[in-house]
Length: 113
Image (cartoon, rainbow, N blue to C red):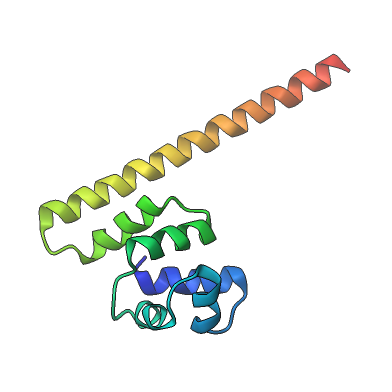
């Protein structure tokens, strides 16, 4: 995703209809939000943290995602893409552990009754 798409995702999640309302909610200046929403500027580090907080996403993932699309240096761009893949794998493993833990807890509860 790019910065503009992250802004749109926040608006959708918060059910907001204007960039102005999103700027107020995220405590980002209206002029900066307008630039981000039009894709004319990349979100600042602070904006990435606020967007991450809104969407429940680690801000480093947002920054790496944006950098993987905008970085001109191929080696750096590949690093960001690799970072993103590692994060996705970590999330998948975490979800599998949570599902397995939940299943085994339910089985223990059933066998105890």
